[in-house]
Image 1 (tube, rainbow, N blue to C red):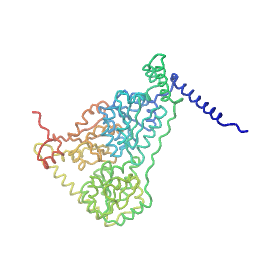
Image 2: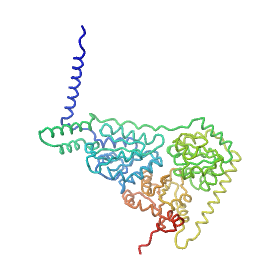
Image 3: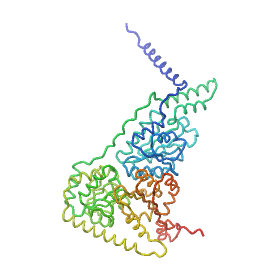
Length: 558
């Protein structure tokens, strides 16, 4: 005779229910304070594990636990005068070192003040980790001080966002942030750290107990039970976690067949041109190999953005060119864009002859094909591509030598024209070409150049020569004014004995003015050259031409 299974099922369900109820009751009991590391200490230790040496911050109560712990571990705290500077400085750290920079800001307005720099980092493909504080997890959406939806603000700007709400989630979140910001196309990531997840356990528990209602009535008892359950949830560790070794970012290598096909195409060409963009400089540890490969290929190259200075300054090999690029691209029969894209800087692809075979090498498929379909697309790290291409190339042809000679003559003619224009006396003002050429004479071989402005920075771009690779910083495609102080700060943090030159327009300098205090406090030897024409002159010229007005020119005070 078979027994009914229903009583057994009921008994089992009752046992499970009692076990869950017991677990819930235990978690509503008063939390016992554990002698464990705080969330702030775990975050700081994880940052240290990733090789962080400088943390760019602007002080705020929501983040005190993190930067106090970081300072205790020997990480240099650089506190600035405006939060946007923290991200610009972290951006420069990535560009010059290949290691993600970290910006730490407080909640609410502390984070909203970074938005322009975060978007600039996104468009410049900079691996930056932005960390902000936040109100306590139990107070979100209840009118707490500086409480906003940080993730909604940052998701459109970042590759990845996270808001860990337990101490056990902190280390994995920071590790994932570092990994994602470097993978594929680099970019900014964001991690929100609630104050009750980073502060010491005893402080958080005391604060919750102090605000909990008193009395034996049902509601105060239920609320205290809920608060205790929430504390158990936050502090869900029984022992300090082990900080794992940082993951090594995967590199996008080109396919061998594609490299061979392009090498074959180049060998048949008569007038090839390479255009290097900033993306080619993202393997900073292998820059010497990249330089050797470019020299080995021996074909003409134009460098833009961070790639400026790749082959040195005045003593660079005779394959590096700065002037008459537009004319060269119209005459070329093969153009290889390594990290450069067909945006407004290349007239949306129209700067290149439509008869030419155009090859794009980029980490992003969509950017590689922006505005103009290429003859061939290689989705790979441009630096790796160039190094592998060099292995397939064996010298250059006679037509290519003639092409190089033609480009050198055009380069020399343009240099002569610039020199002659620099000698024109404007009578009452300084000649900006003369100023830039004088700066150029005074650069040391290790100088770092930071561009921040419109007209003046644009003039410097074709007159001031960076002396080495990884010594040029400009905002990039976003064209942001105000990057100067932050970029210089990041450079000075990495290279404290290196001359840092900032070429400022007078308008751009206004954004950086408060950070002169930061330079003084941290003994950062920064040289500021300001092209002061007392107006937004780049805009003024178009207003004069189109609208026949003079709206942007500053008027004297008296």
